[in-house]
Image 1: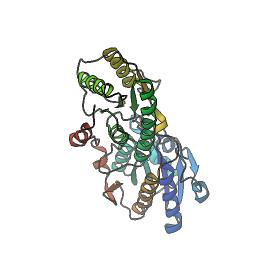
Image 2: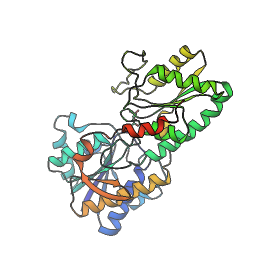
Image 3: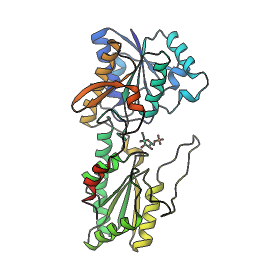
Image 4: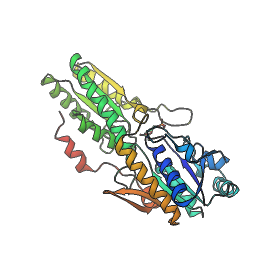
Length: 341
Ligand code: F6P
């Protein structure tokens, strides 16, 4: 059997651990051969490949990023894309494809499977917003990085009697904000799932100042105020049409400064949350998912995504993971609210 492997979407600590597990188990247990596709769906679309054997995966377990490269190329937006992928896979003698990615990548994988391609999906995103899996690898690493940053920001904020707004990633879901905010004792956590009331945020900030401590506000990049409440400095897009980070944090710091008369600063953690070595938890999760992904290929269990449910690795239909996003439920947010102010 010859198997293609690709990593799509935003990179994520743990991608290399999956690739290593797939390749090592595939070669040792099944005698398979592998072809690495470069830069997400660009690889199979253009036939851009990279050798993927034992030596290619040696030493990559603790390395962040992806040895295969990644991109946000969306096959479904390219005319004749599916046929080109099928032709290129046939030309390379491939029997199956393992796609490691988030909602977009796995959505494409699902459509390819509907078009007769043997695909297995592996869930990946630091945002932890994929359905049908309790956690995605990369999330734990991102939360640890954000938590350490917020711990550090507490002391500088306190020394200068300032409010500090920390913007973390999470365009559609506030998991990173919720977990890092809880772990680091933030005074307010703002997430996309719940439009915030700026008057209430200001009250929390003021009550924190009254206790002689400095307020730390953790805000997910996709959080927004209730309608008509605040002017937002958002909307700046790069030349690919993707929104740049850094809007909401800055707007919020300016608003807090104006309304409280206290100094406020904003820090955008940005891609630091995605870079560098994965945590031990993410290495183990990614490895377990990789091991089961190649086992699923061997069992011809195609059209499935490997997932973590409880402590078990299970397989679910790709459609289950890509139909809707897993957002923060109200009761999880309410647990954190007790610590606000
Ligand atoms: O991987 C998802 C994510 O982390 C989102 O939270 C964020 O909006 C996005 O990546 C930003 O990444 P990029 O700059 O690569 O578009």
